[in-house]
Image 1 (cartoon, rainbow, N blue to C red):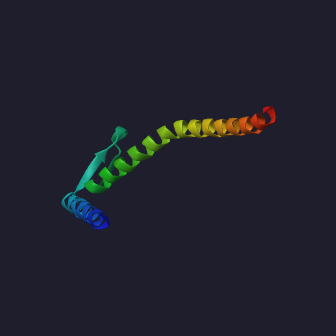
Image 2: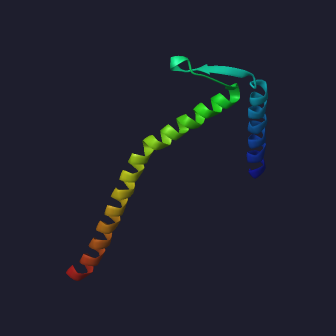
Image 3: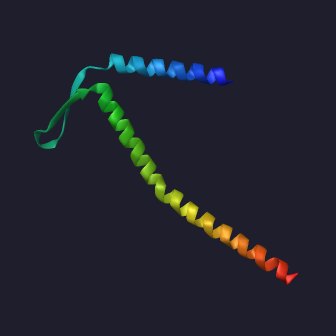
Length: 89
């Protein structure tokens, strides 16, 4: 099974490498007010992919921190109940 993973990773690497080589032409990205930036197409695509992933992770951070706080509160509650229960018996 481990070898199958390496084969899939190798195939994916070769596929992405071929994509990068085929799309190495310089393109012009035009902004507002006449600003322009020239870079290889694969670099622009990679930058927008990374920016999208960063925005997605940032959007999930609030939810993850809220879950962590609730988990800590629930652990404290369980610990408090375990301490109280033996005294009542």
